[in-house]
Image (cartoon, rainbow, N blue to C red; front, side, top):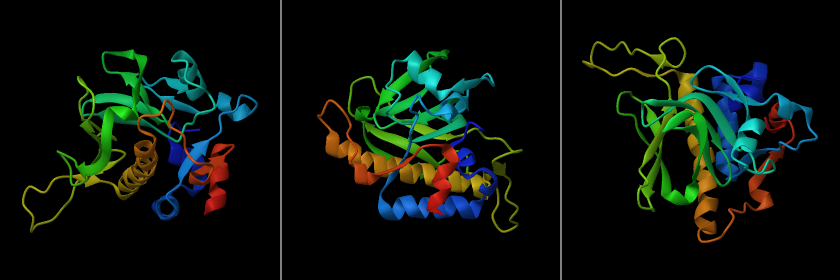
Length: 224
């Protein structure tokens, strides 16, 4: 386990090409991955994210901390991301909302329901030739737009562009980081299609045909 959905599900197959294949599958079928964290599965003791202090946090334990039902996700998760370009956190995407570190106290867990925003967009990063996932058009008082993007790390996911023609060209994501962002944006877009159908209901219910349920991380490789 690595604390990153795509690394966990692809393992040694993790590559630009394999991520692109998965992205196209979920995009073309408008489906959503769903990791079954049933307590009977031993791997639930191993699936984790990494917080801003570098600590591994079992997703099962994070769910328990906020009393979120273990049978509802996760759909997607990443570590070493930032909210609005500056707040470092892990991100766990569930069918009901986003779980992350609390911006008001990063040692605590926060849950943000999808009903807070009208739409999810994939829009331009303010510092890069690349994109951010934007939770856009707040629907409730006191809610702000939130962008989701990887930490800028020149050793891992950012590269400088050398182009003599373009002056002051901004850096960009590495190809694999760009593909990860594309994948995340597709999954959230597919999810938000369901969220918008469910608005006004007590629970966000996903039709079974819209889910690709897998019972351990690497079993998603059967799609490829």
